[in-house]
Length: 79
Image (tube, rainbow, N blue to C red; front, side):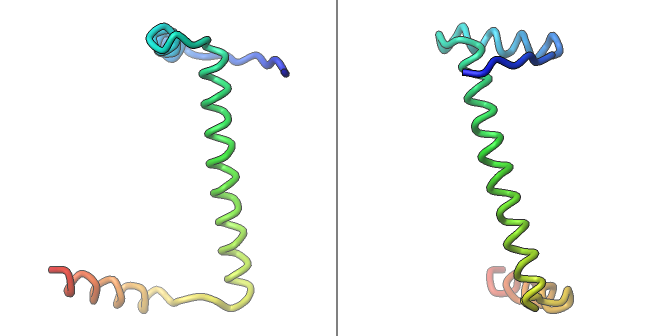
């Protein structure tokens, strides 16, 4: 394992203490889980951005007016 230092404001530390107490888990385990989730989410977001940029470079795009018209049609169909 790697050890890192993190500075938290007092209110977040108090919330983390309460969660650790109620779940009977170590604060470090909770922080590691939170970081794992955050990193996975950010990685997924960045992959989606890269896929979107690749689509854009390949010419796959829809102009704004077409999107607005499609949304308005969908709204009318479901109203």
